[in-house]
Image (cartoon, rainbow, N blue to C red):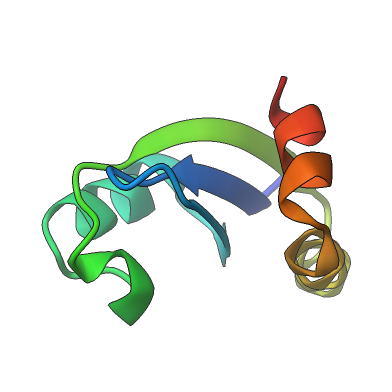
Length: 80
């Protein structure tokens, strides 16, 4: 069973935020409540637009870093 996730949110200002979690629904709720990452606090509501699951934390964290290096266009293609 996969316990580690990388997710992409579309913020209210149409920017994209990428993060790591072990509970996607809880984490999205935290972002929406203004309790998530500093970046998303002023950009609510957020919409979950992409999720990938991984067997290990290290694999998920590596993928999160990889996605964060993507250009805006490449991120848009990923979430299509």
